[in-house]
Image (cartoon, rainbow, N blue to C red):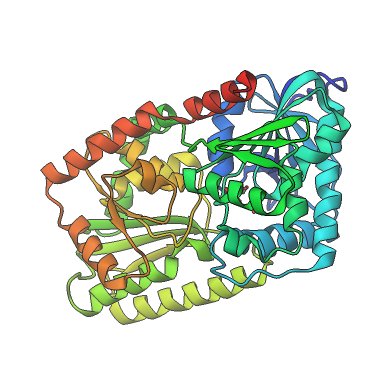
Amino acid sequence: KKSTKKNAKEFDFIVVSNRLPVDRVRNADGKDDWRRSPGGLVTALGPVMAKSDGAWVGWHGAPGEKLDAFGHENMKLIPVELSAEEVELYYEGFANATLWPLYHDVIAPPEFHRTWWEAYRTVNKRFADAVAHSAAQGAIVWVQDYQLQLVPKYLREARPDLQIGFFNHIPFPPLEIYAQLPWRRALLEGLLGADLLGFQRPNDASNFLRCVRRYVNATVKQNQITIGERTVRAGAFPISIDTAQISALAATPEVQERAKQIRRDLGNPKTVLLGVDRLDYTKGIRHRLKAFSELLEEGRLNVGDVTLIQVASPSRERVESYRMLREEVEGTVGRINGTFDTIQHTAVRYLHHSYPLAEMVALYLAADVMLVTALRDGMNLVAKEYVATRANNDGALVLSEFTGAADQLRQALLINPHDIDGLKDSMMAAVEISASESARRMRLMRRQILDHDVERWSQEFLSSLRSKT
Ligand code: F6P
């Protein structure tokens, strides 16, 4: 890794997110190394930043460590330091135990603590300072996600010359839920420091506009907000994936061979079902396991004929609701396997790991049915990645209607994950789908994501930011 430490105020384009695309980790041999960060944000922005000569400002995942700017895989990364206490109060606390559940339909109860809010403000100010220090005159700054909602305001105060965009990767809640937040007005004012605010779905944008109308002293007309002299726009910009990169990986002989080997290693079942999620309570993993175990119980599916691979990548492991979820999911998997496994075959192959992209693509290729059963999800890029790998137009996607992706992948088998009987019927329909029906659906979905890739998403957002209309 060569150092690309730059002079201050050099970059014309800066992306800022809570996490950098790589996390600092310590290997078994005691050496420091870098590992791809979890989640959809990095999946989407990695390819955009690899092609740009801007800089990426964010936390490097290790508490209490101060690092200089560095280069990694064609990207210029500027680390922001977080103390162990700030990780606990700002990241695990306010971001992931207050905002995350509040913005995801209060599936878990959000907690409101003034000390967490104080830490959120302090850390958002630090991110804004890091950007202000590195941005060239008139630069474009693109702030990402719910962890940094105060950054647009702090940044505008420090650097009124900048053009500031903000994109929210997760849902924006309805007014009736947002109203619970003790700091609801301050957070909206933080966001309104931006020139353009992007959301995943039109619904998220209109939820936000309703909240502004209610809690901020501003005029809202359609998607335009006027506060004093300034105009702020808000709209939907559904995010996507690097479709060409995923399709290309899926076409390599090594990945195709690996996919065959995965099926062989499972004992060549007729049907492989797959779930891929961060281990998060929003993803509906328990609902999926319940439906699957009832199908086995009723003999509509049989172990040996079918296997469910569930990749659950470790996430936010020190947050209480995530610990409880892990206990529950692992208990359930143990019960299902204990009941239905044979010496030869397993019902659920559960993997609490994260994998490199090539291995993920091999898993997608190996799967006849992809299960995305989120209770609420801003977009869900796993659904799009699965479709991108199906060059033969085979396979079936079972997709929750509570994901942003359901707006675009209309030909998926759409389900309500709370309706377990409906979910079971759709899983059976996916297992039994005819080649012609699956090709008809897959062809249309592939066309959608080939046309609307992440490059197009970023261009549409950034050109809207520049055009000021
Ligand atoms: O896409 C939503 C998101 O929360 C990202 O902002 C985040 O980087 C990713 O999921 C993974 O979560 P975390 O960074 O908390 O591990």
